[in-house]
Image 1 (tube, rainbow, N blue to C red):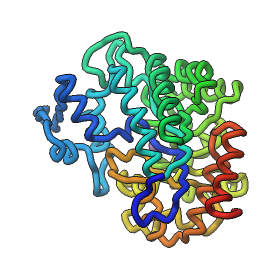
Image 2 (cartoon, rainbow, N blue to C red):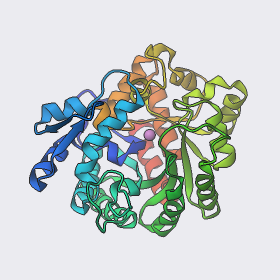
Image 3 (cartoon, rainbow, N blue to C red):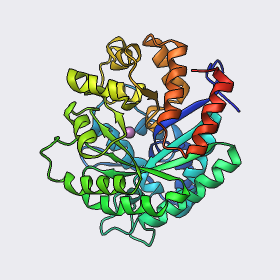
Image 4 (tube, rainbow, N blue to C red):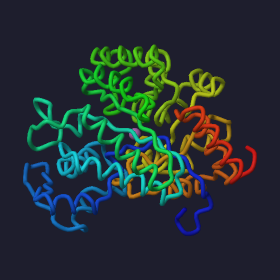
Length: 365
Ligand code: NI
């Protein structure tokens, strides 16, 4: 197993990482060149720039200082059209994902993505430049095939999570049905991602909620992005109306003392993404004010994760280092890795093995 030099944690678990946010930028360039598909960046005035080298590409898509959601979306607009709608490209990024995780010392990972964004069969494809016959279902099959092969070749366990998008509730019924269909191929859960919504008031969420109820009724695990940039109420909504077992981010839960205590008592698992939370402006730039410090000191159940490495240019070890800088001890980080194993959506057999491996590496926790 290869790990970053000086990396103290040789056995890592990642529960919150977006497959389409974890592509190698070299791969984007390579596919662009071999397929003759130009990488185009469009600025606010509609001015187009064609990108042909690594340095310019990284300048467009890597974000290192706190920014707006708009900049994040701009990055996706630059690289997603190179991958979306292309079966070989989707296979390649999912296969390379396994290799990159293994190289970072990750032994179990749940990769999440929305299949519609990578497909080209919709009336108006989200990112693909042309319409074609690569459907959301084909995307799921392709990703499952690639993750299967990658898991075997790089000796890592990889499951996947299908994301509903808050701005596209009409996709949610298909997402839950794909979760059901591909349950035996490592699709372990449903997620809700995308822009923040106004809790309780957003009629668009109806399709979403129905899908989460169906997931619950069919034994599909549930996690929900909530309380990231949006209010704590989003966390309550996810728990009470979407049957969420885990919360993606959830930093703003601390704004509501009653809800915070409830989450602590019930052991609700929070998928914390330290670097991401600062770059997206979800948490203060002053890292000593980060809610993670309170979570760790008060025994909240959480894991540490990377979110979107192609944009944040981070490896999981970097997020562990950042947690150390916030004052978390190595023991607290090891505890978070055990918590990640327990909160994972792995099969009972995978979970048992993972926990045994963790005890072998770090001792009982
Ligand atoms: Ni996320």
